[in-house]
Image 1 (cartoon, rainbow, N blue to C red):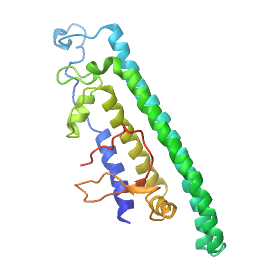
Image 2 (cartoon, rainbow, N blue to C red):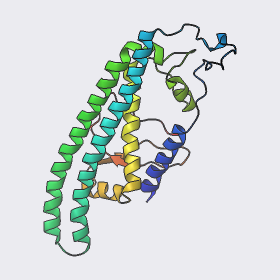
Image 3 (spheres, rainbow, N blue to C red):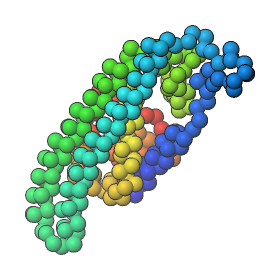
Image 4 (cartoon, rainbow, N blue to C red):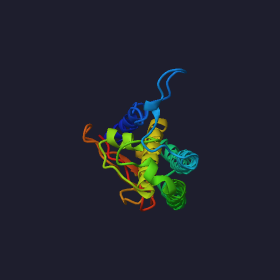
Length: 237
C-alpha cells in the first residue's frame, strides 16, 4: 500500500512543478505601441537562425517525449493486462496453480521483450534530443542571463545542479518521462504495483525501488526498465 500511495504522490509533486511560473526569461515582453522598448532587448539578441534552432529543440523535446511516453504506456499496459487476465481467474478459482504458473511463465517472457523495447525507445528519445538541441545547448542552458526556454529556471526551482550540455538535458528528460508514465499508470491501474510484484516474484527482474521522496518519506516500486545509460531519474522533494 505504501508503494502505491508514494508513486501517486510523485505524480502530484510533478504536476505541481509543471504548474509553477518560473518567472521571466530575463527579457521583458514588448510594451504597448508608443511605450519604451529598449528594456525588452537581450544583452546579445538571438539571430533568426538561432531562434529557429531553439524552437526546433523545444519541438523535438515535445515530439520525442510524446513518442516515448506513448510507446512505454502501450507496452506496459499490455504487460499488466496479461498479468491481470490470468490473476483474476486464479483469484476466483477458475484456474488451478499449475495452469496459473505456466501462463505467468509465458507472460514473463513477453514482458521481458516489451521492457527491452521500451529501453530501446529511451535511447531513441535521448538521441533525438541530443541531435536537435546539441547545436543550441549554449543558448538553452546558460549559466546566467537570457534563458529562452527556461530550462535554467526549471532546474533552479527543483534545486538541481545546473547542466550545460544537451546530453545531460536529454537524460533528465528521459528519466522524468519514464517516471511520469509510471505515476500515471499507478493512478489509472490501482493494482499497478501489485501486478508488477506478481510478475517479478521477488527476482528484481521486473520491479525495483524508484527514487524516494524525502518530504513524503516514501520509496515507490516501479518497473525495472533497462533504460539508456544516459537516462537519470529526477530527484524528488
